[in-house]
Length: 264
Image 1: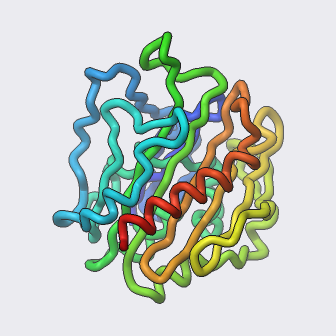
Image 2 (image 1 turned 90 degrees about the vertical axis):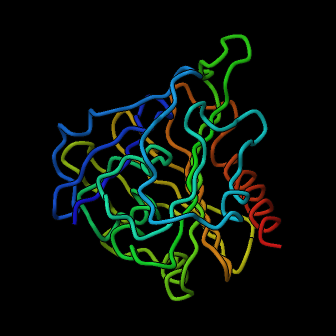
């Protein structure tokens, strides 16, 4: 199955994209250079929604539109995608998500690429929906330019059958994913982080790396009986003013609070 993997550029929080080959296991490093950045308010992304119908309006309301000074990217608002998606090479979803560059191990994609990718690979069926967005903090003086120490993160909320939610929300890490290796980016690991108890279960981790990127991502996952929510903070240079490990639980709490309010 063809699919699209989003990569967070190691030097900033800008989503990049790479098209996976038919095996759904991306390997070609040359494709990782393909990027799209929305930098001016008048530049609106016109990629069509690849979904198969109108999404649940509660999902749209559940997404964060702002967290402290971070807000949706101009021209790239949050959106709901109703599955099945027939165009699995569409950039609509990955442009709104951050993912690491560890792409070689398919069994690790849930942790390294994100829940959105896992859903498109395994649960691209009617009755499944996902809401996706990316937020960043912008300098009021520079207008639309991101601050060099700004908060940047993406959010995904997924709804569907309970069995799917249980699998997506399962924190059990395959043994093969404890130590990561990718010919293009080096080595790394997935390490657990502390996170406050939210929903039915919640867990968090960071994806470490070698060389110039010591930590690729900080990730939190929250599962309830109605949805699974994921927050991903990508590596940024310079680092955000607040340690992402400290920022992550605060974003997760606010995202969970808003999602619960939307489903009341």
